[in-house]
Image 1 (cartoon, rainbow, N blue to C red):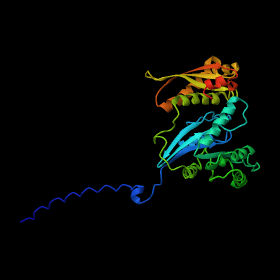
Image 2 (image 1 turned 135 degrees about the horizontal axis):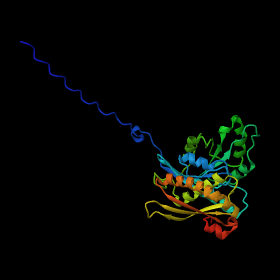
Image 3 (image 1 turned 180 degrees about the vertical axis):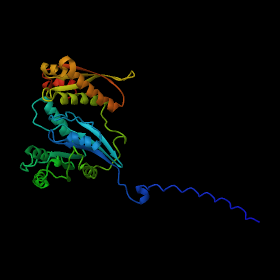
Image 4 (image 1 turned 45 degrees about the horizontal axis):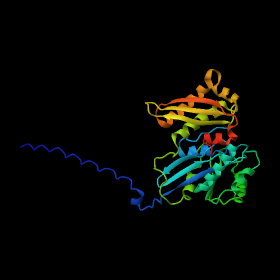
Length: 328
């Protein structure tokens, strides 16, 4: 009698799902307390504060240019990482003011420093071939900082081959202010920014988040629209139109399918108005197109942007005009 046919093998049971990576609490590791606070970036003009803010956030919310004093008002950016929320405050560069606007910018920066939980003093590294001496204005600024936990960030170290030249700087700054840490960085290349975040985190107060975790900035869209227009003016006109430019959003209408934005650009001289408009309006078209693209990227939708240029002589020293333009 032939043997009975064998039953087919039973299918193998499905493999159990791979265990998920335990969180810190399951590992018995304390993730640390929730920390948050305001971190003011302080320094002279053109040392890289706005570039550093953009590098820390991973988003270009602060306008940058080669012109000094590009930042006029505080620009606030929020970075939430795990149990830590950094509220960075980019400030105008402290300088010798020549106008009422300049005095207002300095007052704004100093007030931001007084209101901060942590300060980051941003200075430049010396260049190769130059004497490794700190800039006297940087030392003076360090000496007048409020008694707030402070980190010294030495920027543009990527341009310095001989890092031993940093040693005289460290000694000089240590004699002017007590720094909790010193961090060499390159804001442009984002080198050293992770360490800077670690040092700042340890100085933040233990407290709940100040904003929702997905917040990038608490400033209104109107603020960024005006800044993006001013950024393009500085980039496109180079030295032809200096910092005698103010930008204000006069209309922001979102009632239709496409937001309609009207912006007024105030210049200090009639000649600057002609430069901004350009031959057959070409310069203003270039400025408007680039600014509109920045706004659309931020809003993730198309917008209609219209820009008007007005000559407003002496506005930088006129208290009424300054207040009207938001510098008060």
